[in-house]
Length: 448
Figure 1 (tube, helix red, strand yellow):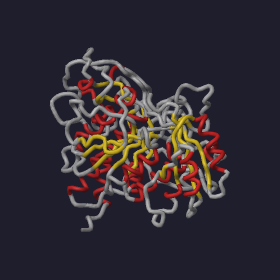
Figure 2 (spheres, helix red, strand yellow):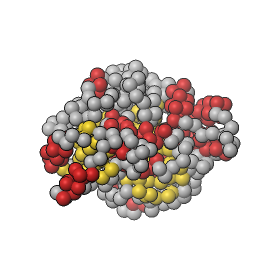
Figure 3 (tube, helix red, strand yellow):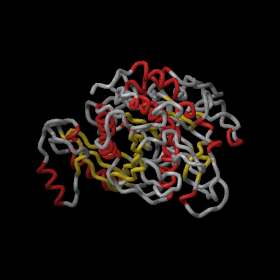
Figure 4 (tube, rainbow, N blue to C red):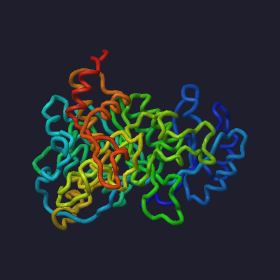
């Protein structure tokens, strides 16, 4: 995993201050602090305060202390690397039949999101919508990802199988090609692009993606990060990982995007965490003084759509993960989690565990994509299908607050599972047809 060990030092100067002397001094020491957000300080004084530097954690700790002592510095803190909120599975495949019958999540509610019905409506395949997936790597030469794929538009993608398979699987969920083989994407008419956070950090990746999109477009955040409950000395799994908006610079980047009326679809994370827990109200020692817990939206709200992972219908692919639409044990939950997608048994491109031993990765498919990683593109696809119906009717696309509202009041309700009651909120499973109805009834005609 290419970025394991690469932590990120975030430096936040006091708004309006000039730290050029400090930057020059650090530069002479071989430490290049980069502005996270490429903005004019007069227009975006808050965003222009953030700088970052990536490296090994142990080297960053002393640097953080040194910089923090400067009288023009508001805060410094170290962020762990971002990781994929996925359930791993990496085996092989063979020749390509039609796997779409295995994509039960496309079916009518309550088991699926009603994609087949949405496709019968003009624009219902995501016409006119751009989507950027932010993570580490992708296989854009895959046979089922050749249409409407803009490839990597920023950052340096990893070729590590860990990252490449994951990104390939996400692309398949949203934009798998329309053909007679392989799988079907939820919104195949959308234009999909990729931004890699590998060498720029998560906040800069979000900011960069937002500047490439128009209002109504979508960014998928395929990432989570160890939170305050994670113990580095004892943990080797993802327990304690949380959604990235908890960190100040990521929150600022997401808010920059949603202020531009771009929809952010954010994985809640696979940390088994209650995001309503009071631990998330405690300001980390070196966060800025004005920080408050974003998981409590009464404090502040970046308007991201936060996605949890729900169980697929029992018997899907011969397996049973509990009651349909119940919270899967690994999924984070809480009041800020807006909606759920399938967290197991998602059939898509990549990994290669379906049918045989073909060594050609461009022919690989999986039945086992999962986590909040699989849930997030399912939700993003539902949003894109709805936006497409508005665009072709020359109506205003949904705004971030609209999207969250419609997802919360529609869909197939979360269900109980012993030890995982519906009060551990991950939200409803989307029903695209219900969202389309709500959006088209409530969105005004486009202002030309």
